[in-house]
Image (cartoon, rainbow, N blue to C red; front, side):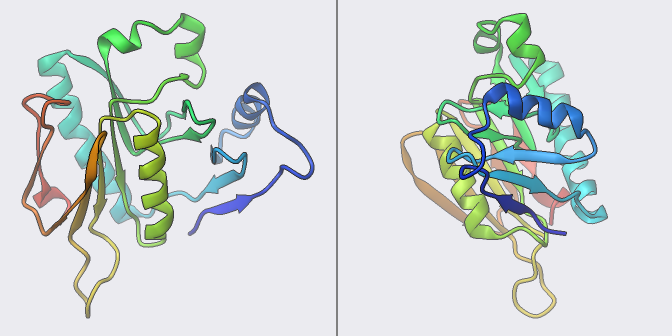
Length: 199
């Protein structure tokens, strides 16, 4: 299971509406689009990745229902980023006041907004440089806090990687090895993710 990238630029410069229609016409496939217009066909996740995704998402749902500060989105949601890319993070969150600036039509299609927070969970088939590049794209688009959690790929021997990269709007990437918890900081006030559900 891997992602495939197709450069359509020599043939067609796909508009936002055409990309949206392509996704609606092929609901069994998951697409992203790079800022350069490359079409990325994402593979489905395996069982371990899918289980971790839902466990992590559940923690966000519980927090968001308690605090009611914004809107939470799963990996099926595609965001039209300011840089021209169309991306679907594993978890995304947007402050309510920012979400409320969108029209009903924008909310219904691919929202033209960068989330305040994104999370990407590496699967065994993901390439780290590709996901790091996507995280930089999020940050350049205005995402305030991003977590890249790498806990499924093989490391040394039979052990799995236990690494987190934290992307903030205006500071260098912070790399944590085997952290036990992650704080939502000022972006997600009061949120803390216990990484025991990942490791």
